Image (cartoon, rainbow over all chains, first blue to last red; front, side, top):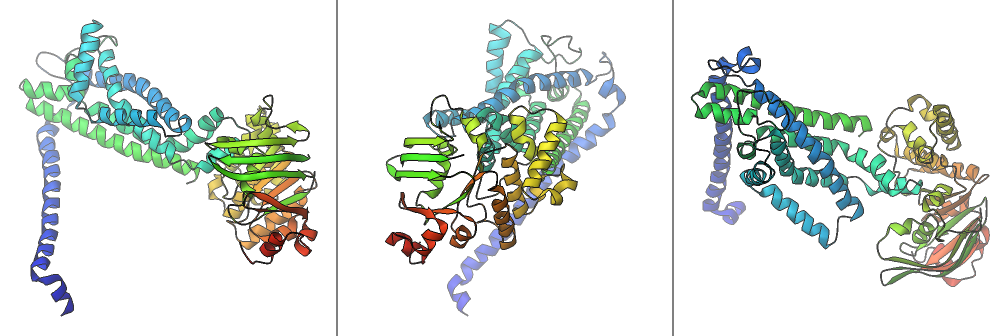
Length: 284
Length: 249
């Protein structure tokens, strides 16, 4: 047969072999994910209790309540800083620099490089600046600012993408009605890009929640005290996992992981849900 | 308002897109620009509300007066110019917001805040664009849910809400079906009672149907400009004749 002569027996075997390799790899990937989740649930779910979640941290019973407070404050600090700075930077690059020119290219490369730096390097930076130079010691504020710097490139990049996806017809339409550039950007372009930006911000919050390397060097890992101010040292959920695992509470570490896992899943659902909701309200 | 253009030249970088154009456009008439693609008719249209300001490397010389005012003068506010000289684009471009907010955008831009006043402008503009009856029950719904033809009439209403003296239309029906096109043409005949309309069109039948005067552009030059009847029945220039009889373009 014609096809047989063209492809040949050897390459056909190779092709079907590749197919099975793909299937095998998929099974391995899924199995690895399931194993992680299963292991965490098996060890952690038994330890999930009111005491662990919201109780007071005492010598006999541990609690992740201080970590809840710490994580929440870190999110607030980092988002308050990174979201406006990131969005305004992206607006400048896309709407004012028209997304071209040498400067934009340099800034883009810088942002992409920053996004690729291992987070422990950010942590070291935060440690040297806030803990040492500023003499704040370990603090939520120092940790939060360092996290803000870490998620900044992510927010800039995704806001840029969202702005670039806004059709030029909207900009022209607005300008042609006599709205100035600033009004066009803030009344038309940014709202049109809102769903993408909101999704990006929520995913960035997910990164804040999951981050540990930065916080090891900036936050102090004080697991038993509720931080009294933003300049107090503290802990976060991810840090608690590290602390529990290395101080003889492996099951509590697993339970904390369950909580963290749930929060990240919820955030991802929220990100897609809110994005869709905004789009639907705009009628897309 | 009368439009008066003298010695208009325009370059995109090194390319000269418009060559020494002189033109007077009369008040309360429909003027059509025709010509093959790339002849400069859209470019010329966009000078009149200074949309070419946005194009990098665009250089314009000449004098341009609308209602006696030099539109490139330093004291001319480009936003107020664009309020007076509205524009409708080839592709309907309603904003991703409600029908009401689309229409209210220009009045809000120029400081109208009172709800009763906005309501009045929105209804009035939609009526003038003959689309009020179709949308009056869903003003709070997104404008993106409308059909293409409705969207284009919404864009006309949105431009009218700024209370312009001149309406520029850049191939406003080329993306629409014949029925929607007919509605927009009928609308233009009504609107010319109160404002000056300049339309770029690829469709010569459209020009004969709606335009009082027609201008033929070719390779950046204004070849012929006359009453529509005269231009289509006995053109004086050979190139015009070749174009309208379909020998090129």
